[in-house]
Length: 185
Image (cartoon, rainbow, N blue to C red; front, side, top):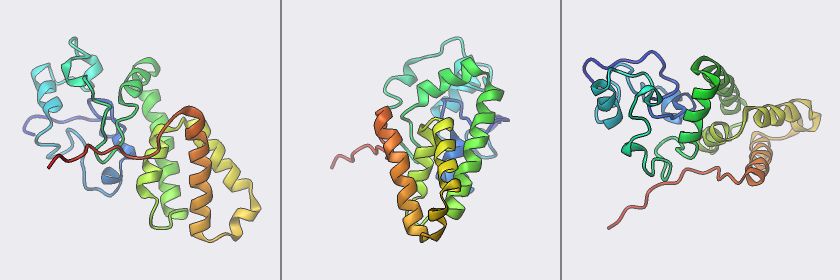
């Protein structure tokens, strides 16, 4: 979008953790404000109209009508914690929040390179996005310390990790799956 650029491309204007999105990881999406950006993003246009705020929560009108039902459906990335993540970023400070996200990105990249049987990319992106960093680190520590894990096939390793993440998700009432809007015919 013309005249619209942002410096932080891992956390969107509206509170998405873009750095944990499969599209972003594959280099298909520059994030809002990165290069050509999302040409049709109404929130980016709104930012231009409100002094080019870096994050919606910096706008005096936040939260506005655009946030009504914003977490209901997912796109390429989960929207399930969008509002909570925005609040967390406000409370922690954006630098601390982004540091936590960088740690998550590092773990996600390791999962995708070492524990992906070719079918887990979206699951890992959603799980790393939604689960607390401490829980993710505990799963990874368990995997690293479990010597029996080394003898498993990549498929079996992936199944075990999925099971560990699913157990945590159930305890926290989370759904580790993208929720797509149904297409009406």
